[in-house]
Length: 299
Image (tube, rainbow, N blue to C red; front, side):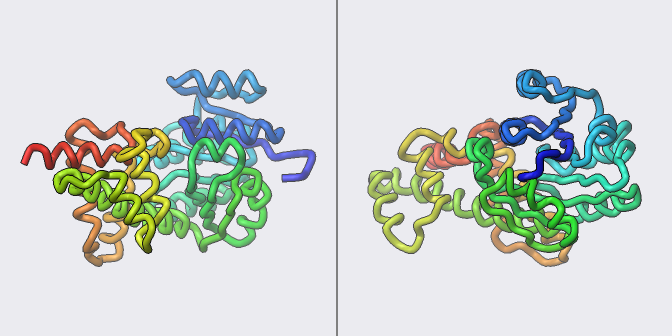
């Protein structure tokens, strides 16, 4: 955003992605308001760089022209928005709320209506790529909302993302992200099983990858699963199995809302759920290879 006077941004959710985005915004001179959290390190870093710290979502909203959320579940978004001292209690007329997380679309649409009743607006803008790319403003942003709101926020999105899309009305961003993540995790689970099956068959994982990646199956997700299976660097894909399970679960909920059966997601959800219940929840998705290989070794 090129204007000298930049809008004040309130940011809630300074995890790996959120703190990277805050760093990017501060590099570009945006005034920041952040909310106190038990994980003090990213808050303290932001405050040392000039951010103002407050203690509730209501205070964040009252002090900000744009409220950005980067929290991990629909329940967390609803608590931040609708709970006691929530964003809706402090939302200023004309302000914008942007949910950068991955939420259930029906909840997003309901919250957008509540923002509208307060004189504000809401967009969903789920993200692609990693925190490392967020620091450099190279995210993929799947924004959704009214065209007028998108045009107003596009300069800010442009400061955070390399590829900025306007995918439709409120809720469309979360819908697209859930479809995207369902497909990605289907590929991840299938490739994990392929590597584990290669182990049983006496094939080298490197050979399997070399052959499969030379044809039409090659994809970015295949490369990411290779991080765990071959390179032993699963942290290069900083997305946990628990988060993957959550997103596939939301996809299943979306399918239920449309009153249609999902034919594939039950198998993906089952694989991720088994891994999660076996203590793999906080491990990265490329480590699904280790989980499946362990299951096969117990046959």
